[in-house]
Amino acid sequence: MNSSTALATVLVDALVRLGLRHLVLSPGSRSAPLAYAAARAADEGRLTLHVRIDERSAGFLALGLARAGELVAVVTTSGTAVANLHPAVLEAHHAGVPLVVLSADRPHELRGSGASQTADAQARMFLPSVRYSADLPAPVDPDRQAPAWRSVVSRAVAAARGLRGDGPGPVHLDVGFADPLTPSPGTLPEDVRGLTEVVGVPALQAVPLPRGPRTLVLAGDAPDPATGLAARELAESAGWPLLAEPSSGARGGERAVGPYRLLLDAHDAQGPLGAVERVVLFGHPTLSRPVTRLLARDDVELVVVSPAGTWPDAGFRAAWVVPAATVEGPAQPGEQEFAARWDRAAKIAADTVDAVLDQEGGLSGPWAAREVVDVCGADGCTLVVAASNAVRDVDLAGRPHGVRTVSNRGLAGIDGTLATAEGVALAAGPTRLLVGDLAFLHDANALLPVPGEPRPDLTVVVVNDDGGGIFETLEHAAVVERPTFERVVATPHGVELAALCAAFGVPHSRPATRAQAAAAIAAPPRGLRVVELVVDRAAVRPRQERIATAVREAVADA
Image 1 (tube, rainbow, N blue to C red):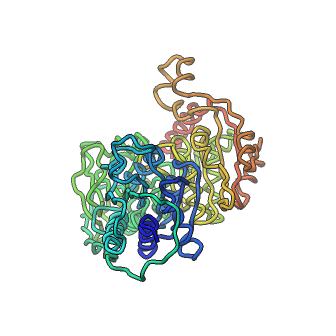
Image 2 (tube, rainbow, N blue to C red; image 1 turned 120 degrees about the vertical axis):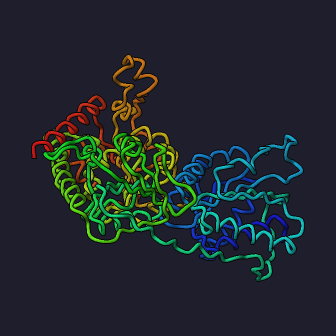
Image 3 (spheres, rainbow, N blue to C red; image 1 turned 60 degrees about the vertical axis):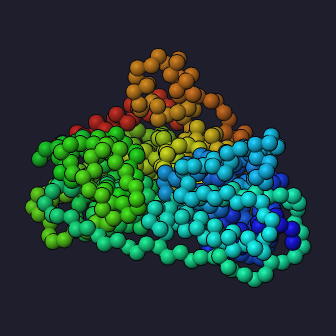
């Protein structure tokens, strides 16, 4: 067995032994030894191999698989192929998603020489956005070096999983391969020297929070289901209102509030509902300005629950950071009264949002969000939600049914949304994706079929308002001249999505009525298909204002 084949075989074998179940591969010559080793392991039933032509889509497919709870590796060849993984690596870093990146490289002596497809800094490309990084030279003595290779893989997997207290995230192994890159016959000795099983840090003791203050539990994005579960359990045991973003894993149960962002500035008969004294924060909140203002207030005590070494505090107001939180004793009268007011307002707000949408008629982003959440709640499908208006519409109009929801909120970008959803569906089963037209077009390469690769059971619901509808809700639309706004901010595209889908061989439908759209959305996801809902971008801001006004008035009048 030649040296490059031996190195690739040891790396893939070590990853599988440490729990790798999915490997995503983009083709290339320098990475061929890893490709052959992965294909052999897949043929033996040791892992599932996914092949994608576009490296950026491959990276986000791996991210989606990882978001479904799997240990995943992604393999690319050298040069710009590696750079195309950077958006997925950044998202994994900021969201705390474990991901193993294996990039093939030229031998060390060729770096800086002008050799084709050789980036001088490839081994350091993702620093400091990875939990662990290693630069493996091209092998010279596989029998002697194999234990060191297994040790490197062990350290990388432990770091990716966050087993030593730093929190999960991406890791990078840059692997040098020398010719020959083609496979050679032979087997390696049955040997696991250097392979290390790393035990995680023990669960940390919960800190008891005193009773008395008017308290809200706020749950932001959290890829680890344990985080959302902890937020929900605290809210329910304490009797405190739960403000849970869609991808928090906490958006369900008796304490969860639906359109909470409209209530933070609302008043009921007893006064402002935003008269909060303490917020207990889980996860990474990113969705709304009312929440951002709440977390930056001087008169609110902010307790951040974070078992890892970092914590969110964009308003610089965190008073305490604790690894876990609990509450002891009965609720005080002030807490109970405050929670009861939020319970009443939450029901009124959710009913009012429904009423406005029902009276409006026609297709819209919030209506689609409500519909998708309801059907996922009914049939148990996973929901993936794109950035921008899609996730905010779910936050506003989706009832807190406890639907398992995934969204790339680490950096809240629109990149890789389709590929992420495909990864989630391939790992978790039938899935629906709610996405805007720009995010859909930005990742259209994820629709590219690869012969022999299975299509996921994924229904893609595209809310097409021909441009960046979220900008209609921001200050830009009100202060910038319309022609300039349209050209450099809203960016209408006029793309015929049906033709695009046809080019990729993906079934497409464009329902014109609510009844037709509801039936298309509710159909069980089988294979990959696209449901396009054409909506009016000019109606986005007036609708948002109409809903906010109706909620404030309904809560005040109750």
